[in-house]
Length: 151
Image 1 (cartoon, rainbow, N blue to C red):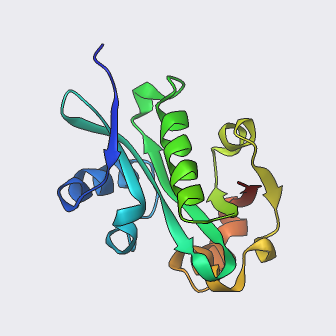
Image 2: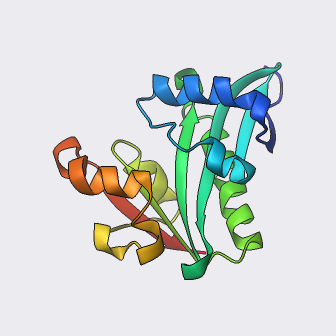
């Protein structure tokens, strides 16, 4: 098995990122708007994972989003590497508080120090995002939980 390489996302990655996110039933909305804050994981020239950050600098906060790894690679550390990159990037940008939404990956994020929080824990600047508005309207019926971590 060849090595997994992480690199900042670029426009050429977007189609494969969207396909991966859609395969995991995750929204790819506004992906291009935040692309400079995304990372991709590749092996043998194939995109196998991605993740990123929506930045809310006014509140020193960020939304971890669009985290996905090919299903056959779950549990191999690829997701952890992507999350570490996102967290390091957030710190470099001055972010102090990371938030996220998840339906199925709660245990993964708990292992990385995230705690469950109420939706209203999100700062005002994040509440206008597509993801927050969707979750606020549909999240409870879909089993979406909010989580947060100080970095």
